[in-house]
Structure formats: C-alpha cells, structure tokens
Length: 112
Image (cartoon, rainbow, N blue to C red):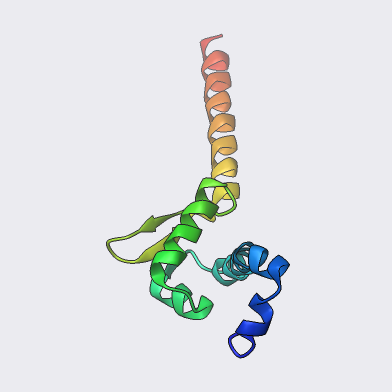
C-alpha cells in the first residue's frame, strides 16, 4: 500500500472508501489480537496494528460502545481491560438463585 499509494489513491472509488476499508481490517485484526487476553497494553496493540495510540483508542472506544468488545480502557496505565467472564457471571447468578431457593425450601421444611 505504501509503495503504490499514488496509483491506488488515483482511483476515485478506492480513495472514497479506503478509510472505511482500513477501519474494517483494523477492527478484524484487533479483535483477533486481543481475544486470548484479559488485559493487554495499548502500546503493544498499537505496535501490532502499526497505528498511533490515539487512533487505537478511538477504535477501541467505538468497539466498546457498539458492544463488539466487552472491556474498558485504563488510560492512566495504558491498558485495555477485557471482561471475558460473562458466561461465568451468568453461571454464578444461576447458582446464587438456586442456592436462595434451596435455603427457602429448607426454611419451609424446617417450619413444618
């Protein structure tokens, strides 16, 4: 892309859509890159995607707001903190509810 920038950008269709296309590619690569992590440094992601950290933060914010990425950005420490335990949270809630019902059943049976 860098070597043939002039010839690529001379096409009006490509020039009009290149930013959207780059954002789409970066999004796909970003989601695959951070998938195995619970916490990852923004500096590392920025280097891997070869984009400035400010652009990376904007992309991450868009993904988080669109619910395509479940996490938060710690700007002070430069870390993306991913919440990958939503299935575990659901199981915890289900077990807590079951336990609550078991306690009520036990109380009822003890009262009779």
